[in-house]
Length: 141
Image (tube, rainbow, N blue to C red; front, top):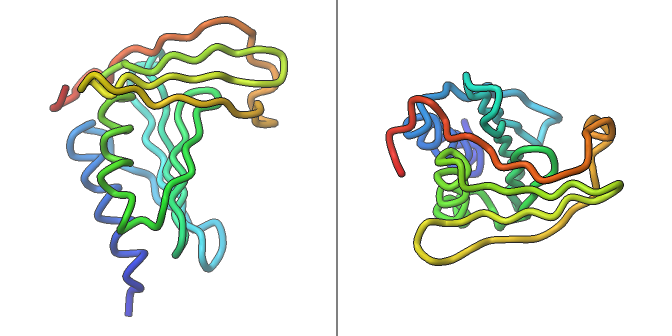
């Protein structure tokens, strides 16, 4: 039997895959943690990653954008809004030596923003401002 949180996470990933026209790559990180990666065909567009657990959904994009959300079932709408904005090319990141400041224009007059430390796999990223391209086959705006 598939747990409710797994079903909710997979439904969300398929929804994001539908409007981005990118097939999500699913992998289990451990017995209570799933990851879905969305790699756009345009290298100038931001990769998105959803990490789901029974109690939390974490949305990653670009070089350091990170939003910690509620459970997959409760955060699906917010995660979809973030994914639509990133896929539409409305993510800007300012990369410093150890931190990334990010802004996502949600397209409705609102903005989601924050900052995070640079992930280890991103430490060689040059500092500066990054504005990402939209996903090439996007079916939403």
